[in-house]
Length: 574
Picture 1 (cartoon, rainbow, N blue to C red):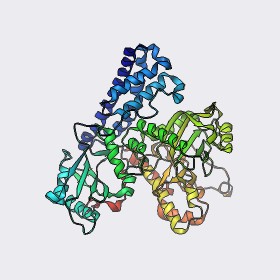
Picture 2: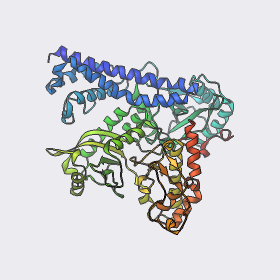
Picture 3: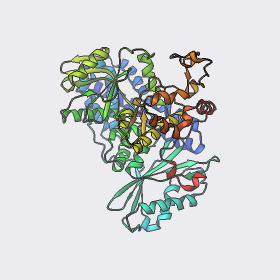
Picture 4: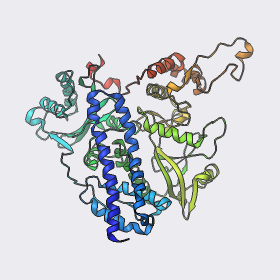
């Protein structure tokens, strides 16, 4: 291929990426207007639309390769890549553009891409010190103007157009918390700075101001949720401080943020100072840049494989009927492959399972549904598989496997953060731990219900406990919308024969749910059953679910916040 042809193709691919990011940024920046208008239906629509945007742009670019028939030959791509690198030297999103190049190349070159040395397996352009028209974060100096005046300026600088309900009242509550965060003797010193990211982080019905307190000796991350009352006025709802509290806010079990970013890598660099232990992959995903997160995760996985020696093994816990699940003990994730056949009573197929996972991707996960990374044609070293796992994979998912020399290629796999299955976590638990686990279990069901999700298979083995102790659902094959279910009371037996029957003596429809039966099969001890009912007894009544279904049918989903009620300012409880 002539150098000018390679350059033309490189410019064509970059134009496709630039169009993608222009649209991605526009829909993210418009979150401010949607929040100011209180248009929560538009918030949900935009979140769904943005998820699809990347694949649409990749397909557009691939279809445009009809103009370049010779580019179907792999030998042409070193020159294309070299020309592309030259175009990225002054680019503001080079890492995203490299990933877009990989996506296009993978489609054009078909299945050879996982061994292809002509894509960006490692980044070629540095993302450090990329300049933007607007600084990534603003810096405030409380010693110059006083802490209260500084805090007021920070929120006025957000330039939200809605009126404030009572900003002075909110600042009083905020000031009290911030002073407690300062090192003793709680004084404002000349070295104290407040760094605030230039864009608010929008998600659902809240906007979050994200920043850090820099005392000169330490940096403390914080976030302040801004919300709207029923009259459309703004108020500050709480302060989240420290890695643990912000970690819940940035959990991948929640929907992605909408953030206006000219230079995404600069936002990620800032967030890395708030979460030094959180992989950059997860931060990109939280910002809605899911494909970039997948790219970085894949690199992290292979870097880990290069520096470790342990083997993939069957994941601990009760084996599922739909997925084969395995893990690398030294790597905190699980790998899930859909079985070729499902044994009764499972009545789903591969396509339905994949649709369920896609539904979760689109849905507000309210911190209770695990997010997944979905990959095709993942090539892993055969030597890293325990024989027992390899035998199980070849027996249960042969259609998904292909041996390529010293590699095992898995055609389709979901990857999730590893959690301890709830049934395993509760094994041998004392009363305090049992109570904590069952409370979280009930809260997970309750919050999912408020988001129009009925988990379907509520067995404890299908829920996991995260590092922070939250209970999250991760088995999606029987997941359903609450509004699609029919919640019924158990009919009263008319005689002893019906009372003792091992099979239902009454008609049961495919969408019928009998909440009264849930405690009977969920718990194997009376202690666990009694504890659960004492905390969440309403979940075992048809009335709770019928009322929730009626509420959701009227378009009213619960507004589940990523922080406890007790953390909210006192005036917000009124």
